[in-house]
Image 1 (cartoon, rainbow, N blue to C red):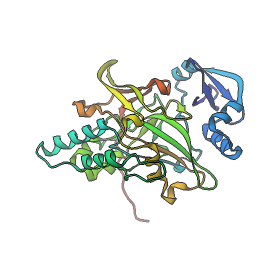
Image 2 (image 1 turned 135 degrees about the vertical axis):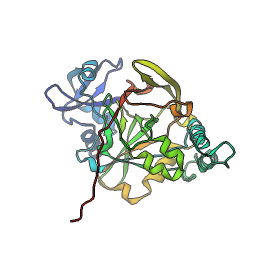
Image 3 (image 1 turned 90 degrees about the horizontal axis):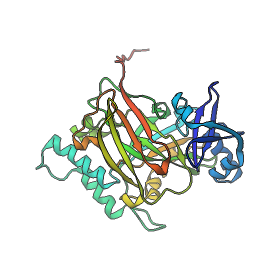
Length: 331
């Protein structure tokens, strides 16, 4: 089952289930957001897909019209955006490790010692998929922002005036709601464009934190149930309507050095991330990066992540954000 959120022509929020052919959306009757659906499922002791199915009515909406009119929302959000944590990990796919290493090689030369990035990737290869009941090696982790940094599918991705670059990071995102007793409940998975400044990061790995504090996009659809073992698709950068670059998207645990269970363990072991009522989006890492192939995206370029298992593609256009000078004032 795949869920979406959108606004009606009258401005009302609604949630619904995408039809098998992907053309229409059947709306839920009582809960008008995926967040509300998830709360109801937790309270009733049901799966999210069961709760959504139980709430389906006869009302339908045309998916193409929602897209054309710019009414699509991220597949889940929080009524209080500050309670929506956006975080992630990297170096979980072979492609991402190669790309990260190339970035640092360009900045520091081919004769440099093995980078810390490659070292932590190799740690994942040997200890990132522990046996059931065991704990594996700790992955990389970063803070991306809060719910205010998430832009909807088809919406512009702002490039800050101080950024050295802006590049796509096509990833699978785990989406979670913390229950009343502090239990993390996985709602499902979605596509994500984690959108980072890889040039800033390449200068020094300690700049990773700065390079991640950007907008991102998630969606369009939330896939409930199990994540397929292997997930395949295509990532594209388009310029003036033409494909500038295209890469193969290979994800799922068959293409990862860490299991999802291991990644989740190291995130939710912290008490601050099990605060009842909070929502979490956790990016699982990018398997391929256009910047590793010499692509320098510029404002006006369009990023497209097309993975059939997740329904419609995730598309966003990068735009230059207006300059903002921030001054701190004494109180």
